[in-house]
Length: 401
Image (tube, rainbow, N blue to C red; front, side, top):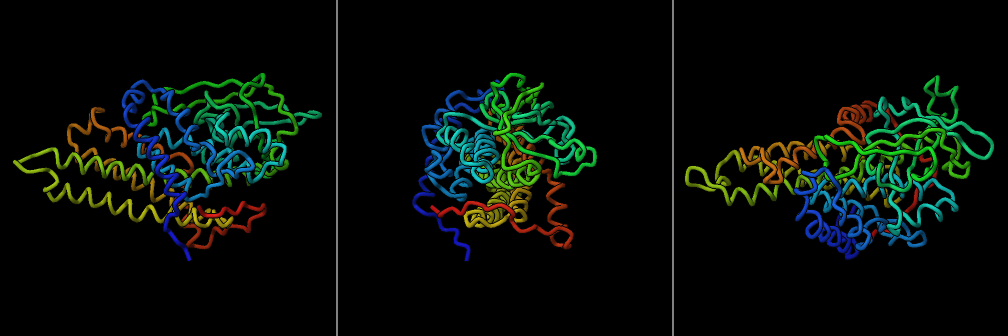
């Protein structure tokens, strides 16, 4: 039976993340969103609060917390700003948890421990200039030469690209299978940002998530030691799909934080703003929009918690995670649009936070699988066209709380 009651340790994680959001993120987010820069106080604050590895086992430098705790932290950080939640998504969801699950012991000691302790920042490299949802459309290659691989290619729209120390990179190791678009020719590697031939850059002019670093990673004849191959050649696609299951989970939970932020901002403003000599909260259509936000939060939250409950038990949750991501992101975008409407002309100005909520909400409908991809996935499950295969690699079972 699924139990959504929270343990004391889960509540403690939620409160830690809430403290970071209220003390570090919210007071300065307008400033850094305008400057399109990361708040330099954010990463040290997250490290001090043990948020950069808290759901990694203690033997690898973490606190041994569970997936529900991860979801709670993502919700609280996105309540402050999406850019803060993105850090947990890529650092933990798209790097640390996959490394914990798929990497060998030497790789875990070398790369997972410093990541979990917050000594090194990490990210994930799958998307390319001409390949997003079409994972087998990537062009990056890694050709084996003796005891190393020569990697060439470019990754685009990578969160933390210009500030991360380690990347989990996906490339073709079988060029014949690349021609055939056979995903069994893809492999995964851990790549260090300081290696010769690796270059990064930052993208500006984004619609949203402006206070977060987003950029590109380029590889020009990069010598990747064979020991940095994760699991085995040909496992890259399976690892990438596992990564996306974790990343989508964090996005779903975070989107619930955005819905709640929209609701709370509208409630406060509805008591402050008066029209026709009445608080605008007394007008029926304003009530309707706020009620829709409340409903969206109430039915989106159990979706990510169900997925987290399955993950805690080491069970596959691709369908449930996809559903949570699809619905929560859809409702976050709708809630943000309504929040701008409630604020009227002021919603069109960054004097208030709702225009930022609206801009940020759009990204989540695109990254980690577009809303269209998730719509098709859910239909295929119902129609019987899609069935998840049994897990081929043991997933870690996590004690709740």
